[in-house]
Amino acid sequence: MVNMESTLARPRRRSEAILFALVYASFVVFFPWTEIMIAGQHVDFQWYAERFTDAHEREITFSELHGIDSFSLEKYYTGEVLWFELVRLLTALTGEAAIALRLISFFMLFTWAWLLINRTSYAIALLFLLNPLVIDMALSIMRNGLAFTLFMIALTLRSEITRALLFLIGSFTHSLTLVLVIFYYFLKLISRVKETRYFLWLFGISAAVATGLVMTVGIDFLGTIIEDRRLREDYIQGLGSPIQMVLWSFFLFLQLTSGQAYIRKNIFVISIIAWFLILNVHIPWASRIWVTLSPLIVVSMLALSRDKCRLFLLLYSGYLVRLYMKWSTLLV
Image (cartoon, rainbow, N blue to C red; front, side):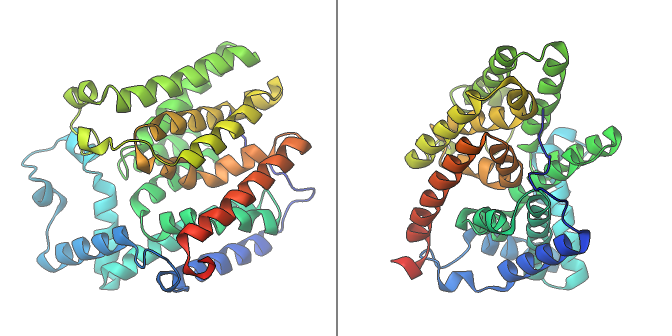
């Protein structure tokens, strides 16, 4: 259901993988990206740094910040309490919110590199790890990135209890993680009922479409069930990237036209891509889903047949060049 198998002819030595991940994470964290970015700054990072610096100096607690007088599981979930407490703790230990946030960035980058380099070549790993959207996610949009990273780590574990615990931690770090968890257990259940290609297709795609529509078209209804800052009409700002829409629709087509064995192993990723496509029609930030889950998605795409895999890499490389032209001053 979730394919994290190696695409390498030989296992990579642990020391070699660790060194690669350390060098990559250090490079991304310390390189002055804002000097070559057209945007010139990481907006979310600056907002986080200012917010947690203020919370640290004023010794504000999560409950005080959100006006919580008594225990409320819903408010702890929607307020993403574990993210707040983690950054607050690291800020107290390091003395600076900016350093605390960069430690989180390093952890995410190291994990992504570790997950990929153990499953593909250096060149292909870097092709995805140096995507500017990946860099932005790791250095700026960290709350989403950290939560989804914990989710991917959980998928590599054998212990169901430890996996469920990481799922829970991720959900209270970023509320959207709960959708991934629901997808995971739903598709796991469906896979046990029947593993035929079209059966998995039907339920995997249907779950993605239904979830996407509820989170967009049905946002008013969802807002009556749970209070979350993302469940507001002003969060639905129209179509995201048209190019990503076309590109990932084609990539999804490549997956859906593969054999039953591939569908069975990769139905989770197929559902995630379909979910992204539905959200992208209504929400500009929908790309964060596939960007943050890149290691998982890349492993899935590399498991396609040789010709499909080559086509995927070719199209993705072309998209990456265009992306850098829009993101960096070096190619303008």
